[in-house]
Image (tube, rainbow, N blue to C red; front, side, top):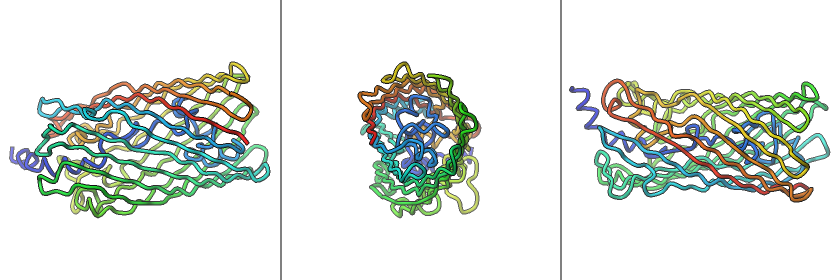
Length: 393
């Protein structure tokens, strides 16, 4: 009982810890895919570059897409929230729709080398409403925005194999409201960071392509505004990830699949144990997120020279630990599955329009173990609608 009382007394601080990562994208802080064509195939992309956003997935693929410009955006509708001690809270009460832009440009130098840039966005937010009081925090809301720019240099080694390296630059903004009444900081802070991305693609047979990619942790600068709320003095990095993919083409059909590993535990603010599972000496409590493996599969059918249809599915392991659900009140990243559809209409040889829809069914994680985790259940569901315009040069 003493432990439970101590934890409940820490409730306001613990909730403040969760604010910067409220209700992020589909797989933790990542969406289910980058590039509208990939989104329509469950996010499959490592061995199947289809547009100039491919550098965000595998930089080697940029040398395979040619000279082109792609610009688009996704509308994301979230249905998220939590219950605590039997009381339900709607995390999308005041805002449930977010706009996430994307942009890609690629330039070929001859037929063997390309230089391109891919710009994507991560992060949304949670808003429980002005009249909501959760553990002493009133009108609690927060928003995280991450812009990630990958500049890719890709080169064909021969007719079958290509390699690529990408310089990843990121900018993130946190805007937090709610904890000031408890003497805790609120406001806005920003940070920048950098990392690298490596990739390979190989044409193994006329029909089979394989691919591999590795992204280092993007080391973000510390945000002094949140010193004491985030681990390591206000540090929130983008996690290391790597994956393998294949694409198989038979006539007008393409079948592709990826497996992606995301190492959430390598970022203290995300992977540190929660308050009831002993963060450890000198560590700030985190969300206790577990490393995640994501499987993706997608199909595409070129019905004609002007119309291509797509469908896909992705499934990730659960990152929310049942022993660490309490911080999930403000980061309810419980959903793992995505069912997707997409299409591309080629309006001319130089211009095409693509769209994708993704449904991520609502999933729940109920806490176990000691209070307050045992009193907490978190949930998340999402709908994505994406459009992009592609121009070939």
